[in-house]
Image 1 (cartoon, rainbow, N blue to C red):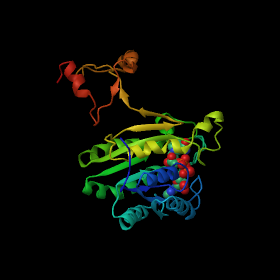
Image 2 (spheres, rainbow, N blue to C red):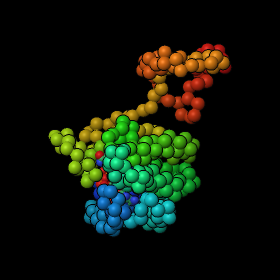
Image 3 (cartoon, rainbow, N blue to C red):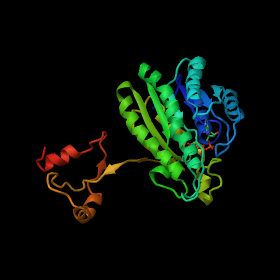
Image 4 (cartoon, protein in one colour):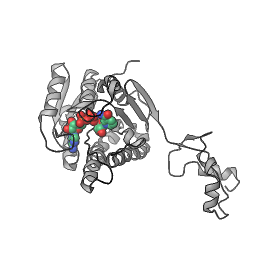
Length: 303
Ligand code: NAD
């Protein structure tokens, strides 16, 4: 099997540097036509410049690929509409959206301002909403789409000083879980990449020798696979760091089932704590709001 993106039209946000730039270069090398979106601001989101997106477009063209630039902010709902319009005008459609644009405003929670929180949530979570929402009708209508959302271990695992970022990044997982269900019957697949790589966003972290192995070019192949027609998966959180690829999953333990017609006390929860937390027999959560409750109640003959 050879994974290719020939003829596919991809919109990649934040593709003017770091991971997004690598994704754009690889996608173009695999045959995709790419809309390189980037606002061109600083890591904290300040400022703007057309140079970031334009430079990557030039790089792609110099290698014989096809690309056009988009300089809108993902936080601008009209700008998101213009990004999608750019795909259609330049290349005649839109098959793939990689929501990658991001900023950081790291501070301990006590020092974090509401503005720090909002700015980060606006770019990562609202930005992904704006762009995906603008692209969605085209994908549903054409019954084909691949949407990738960029989450982070800061959300799935937690990280000191990143309450805003972790909240936004785990919000994207919730978005994916619901969108994967909405897109399923229309061949629109929605997955998350959870990357870690040395970029301008992380270059100040002291990772020692580990940093030598964390090139962004080790993340992009995982994104290209999620973006490919061959990828039948939807609702996956694919991790990619230093050549390691894994799947973060939400699992639920078998837990304890009390009889729901008998009052439950806090002491009963405390007493069952070990059984609630025991991992033996844990399974990936079943999609949908009810999980496995019907099975649990059937097991005690209440259903
Ligand atoms: P980066 O700063 O090199 O790239 C982010 C890009 O997004 C920049 O080019 C920036 O101009 C652009 N951008 C920011 N706000 C924008 C907006 N409003 N509209 C359009 N473009 C905007 O950082 P990176 O490390 O390449 O990060 C890429 C993505 O990967 C981010 O979502 C980040 O949170 C995520 N991520 C990165 C790491 C890592 O280790 N580098 C880890 C986990 C997740």
